[in-house]
Image 1: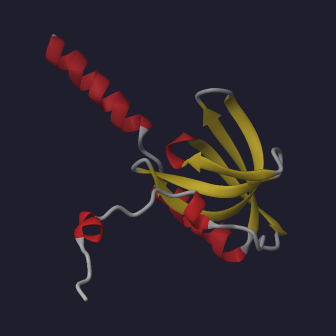
Image 2: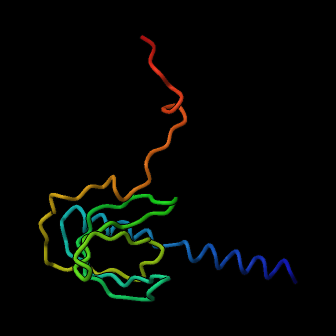
Image 3: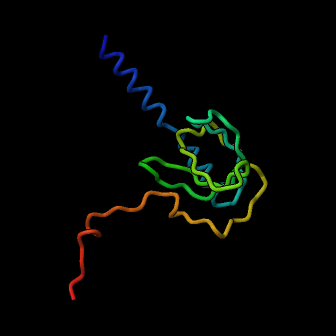
Length: 122
């Protein structure tokens, strides 16, 4: 019986980390074509909220994919974990890319042991 409960718990954990491959396609379409999107986002801290966002990029942070977008509700850039997006709807409205967007401030820094250990000799 304990094996079944462990299996069920494991299945639930996997399900929580899953998102549709169509989500990536939709997000890439929004990013490439500067399309405004409405997302339903499930935040652990604040619960479910609707956000109107300007999608900028998909990044990896803490080993998870995130959508980085300008959130019109908050008036600032926000990072949204893809596995917490309940839905997305693209609008016909387009937005102008913001010049101050810096993708490096939203993703994990590349880590390479080789880079740290390597020193050029004169």
